[in-house]
Length: 176
View 1 (cartoon, rainbow, N blue to C red):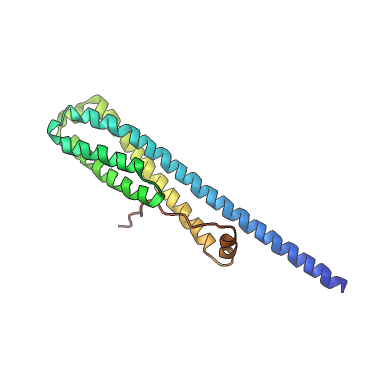
View 2 (view 1 turned 90 degrees about the horizontal axis):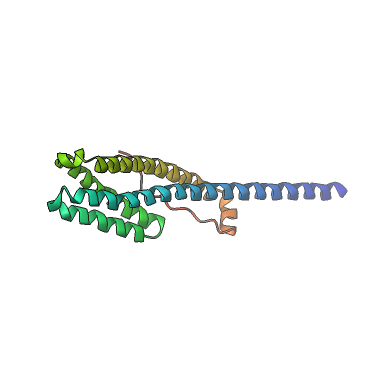
């Protein structure tokens, strides 16, 4: 009889240990995903700070391109007002497309390309865009790992018990 009691205690302790290990792993994955989102948020804030400077510099050279510059400014405001990862991703994608139009202006107006402050802002924005792409890739990878873990059996039992929710992807990555 005593052997059965010890066996039950050992099995119970192993089960409890497994629950604790799985729970801690879910916490680590969730925190890694949240940290990755913070990295994206920093790059988005940098982008949003650079846009007004870039637009104001371009205005002096491309007066009849006012519609393009206003579009970029409007998209920036919409992006900043967006909430949630999915909505923000969609708005940022639209903003990136509008920024592409400013990059076209750079090629269309050689004097704008020659402007030292515009070129410096352009290079800084290009650097931010590169960092944003890398951050997005890392974040989406973290989300994929986290979501797969909490949606797999038997972790999904603990995930639902402790209210772990799947994270949203930030802009679907281009596969083409």
